[in-house]
Length: 102
Image (cartoon, rainbow, N blue to C red; front, side):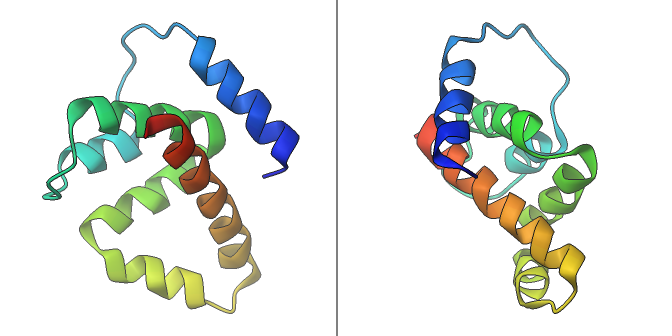
């Protein structure tokens, strides 16, 4: 993601007052994850970032990584151009989520 876009997205997410919304696929996957750090607050934040940065289909694809981390490796190493483009968006999502939700 371009630095200026990332900064604008961070600012928008910081000042947005969000009411209760249906959980995104990423948030639901995070909440059902057996990882120790998966709190409601963190998963909700990650879900909001996903809603802002990933399409619905990208969110569903990325949510599967929580149950099957190996599938992320398969996508990352894929030679398919569509997987490469998805992985670029996924990395941008991860960087934004790390910055916003930490």
